[in-house]
Length: 402
Image (cartoon, rainbow, N blue to C red):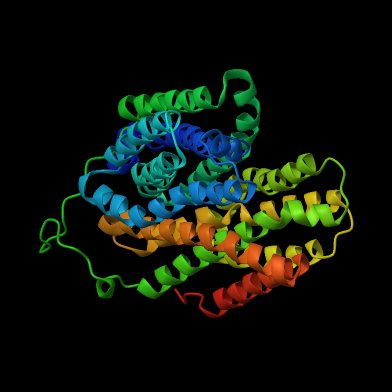
């Protein structure tokens, strides 16, 4: 019996598709995050001179991409269900290549903000790869495949700021954006010529082509909504710490402040890279719900000592361990959603999950900065710990019986 006879049509090319998706997600995430180290410098270069205004405009420009991406993720997921997920990845990679190159041509701060909005509007490659891998991979390997993809995404988040700190002194800020656009264009070519999506499934008997499925038609809609909330809280918990790390280390009188802050921020990403595939494989064997519940509880416990550290290296180690716990959560959530909804709306539901993650990414830094500034840094860690603990307890109580 041949491999083709052994494997369902939707799974024939899943390994090659996974390789293309990991490469594409890595390069696009690198391109989207490499501006972090020099964004304030670029804002100043565009004519903003007041220090407070530079910080404000940097935050606006950074958040603009997440805002537009959150609003459009469900739309791209729905269009992917209707017209094909490969087409959405082609659109995202080409759109991001153009938008990233245009950012290098910005002449004032308003153009920068609008182009960052455009990048989020046209982008969504990483979230699109999650949808394609989740729906084109054999169910028994879904957790492992999504874990590998998550590792590629986290590797991009880790490498992006490092590359962004190295390139501008060598080639200039504007040329850095042009190079990023060129790399994403390579991703566009790889997606166009190497990625093979299975033919679209025929509508079920009695269902009209293009007929929408209502929430009431999804048997496990309550479980899916729970996953949306959990995904939002995970990103909220992780991002709530980011804006206070530098100030927190400053209070500890740390030498080489920016270097140590970078190490602390990178530690969690490194832990996630190392654990994502392993936790995904474990979840395929013992159940995704169990892994999500245990990882939430472990992360909640690890947040408590972070509020009482006395040395920067203690925080580095604790953030690394927390990254190990959080690494497999989003792939497991995607797998739960993928297994709980009809095939023809899987992309739309995973798009909603992506939007909920973006909401967490926007609200987390805002809340962390406010609480840390008004009530003290330790309370951010303790409050986030309570939030994750409540979420873990809720997962235990709401666990599906079947």
